[in-house]
Image (cartoon, rainbow, N blue to C red; front, side):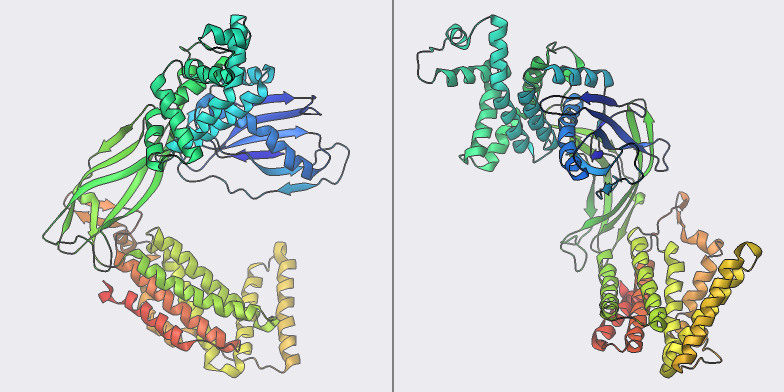
Length: 629
């Protein structure tokens, strides 16, 4: 079976680790485990590292038993991988399982939906394969494997919580690892000195005749052996752990103590685990490797509002803000490092009486020690930040979403009853109109209104088609049938050659079937269909249709929409700078969708809230208007 996990520890392409387990008391039959990283080709210069993939092969009583047991077997190796690279690795989850038995012609299969990782890859580290191989061997040979496994799990959970605001949770798991390791470290120390625990206690100044001498010896072990005689780190770590576990400290006090000692505690716990593995050289890179915070990196912009307004917030907004779209332009791997370049599009929403002066673009995150490091600072030229006033993108999106909900509610009521075959055309057309509106919303959110022009024209044509049905309600079904038959005939003509003759004949058969059904039901097919160019909705948006047609010739008009003149020259861009255009398209899409939905409801004999339809249409008109600012 295949198990996957989000992981900031990455094997290089072509590398991985294979482990054979069992048979033994914990694993009755032999299992083969292979770990590797999925590298995805996402159109960048270099492939992008994604999830950790763990393959587990072996015998199991059933597929369900394998799905239950195999991920548990894989988890210690994922935790060990996190420890090796000192970065977070998520919980391995079952993804794909199937029977690989020989000599069968039917195989049981199961897949659990786990969405592929996308977006900017998280900060991480490349796994040094020789280190991981040595650690796997040491874990399998260890006589204290159970305690090591538990400590590794806590260490890995600490890494997952190693981000700003999560230090107290990281410390909680680190101290649980300390407590788990105490007995094993004591036994190891006794073995090295050739002493039993009583004699060791006497040697370190603890009287074994005292009632709680074993507890005192464990405290000595934690303070002197695990924390290596660092009293300040030990006291802070223990106090934070006790304060969280027993509720004797406020969370702010726990957090303060955790921040003070977490980085050092990571190092002490790491060295204690390596000691039990038999890797005790403190000078090795494996021992000195610090934990990497892979979650706290943030991009930020600094600047100043300039102008007389007392409140820099735009009208109707509680505060000023950036409308910030960030996308990855390219990712290039150089050895074990990745260089990513970004496209940052920013617009400032603020009051009309003030301007914005950008001063710096910064990337900040935790360094590999304590505190905050300034990862990168670049100046932000004022000309690269456009200042915009008025309602935000959420305003147009809210109106368009309302039209979508209005349409969906009508279609859902229709879907609750059986749709007769002759009415399927209406249902298909309203579904297409809704799908186009949803696609337009996605493009507008990505500030690509120009690319949505073709979809908007499709919505207008769909609304006009619905209006032709309304012109003669008694023959609406016949009009729709005529439209479907002519569409099928056009498609048939595309495949009329020898290679498509069979498909073409099948389409002609469907045309004949519709005609015979209409005749059987006594329904009339209009001799001449009302042209969509004669409909009111089409005439109302005729100027927009002509404009879209010209843009789609991809001539000078299209070029002008993707460029902007500045004092420095002509700048070209892939995303639009015009918020008015975005609002106009959203308004038109809103209106034609509601128009289609109302006619669809009437055809399907459904009650429609006309007052709500008028209200949504008016909101769409406001967005279309030049005064919508």
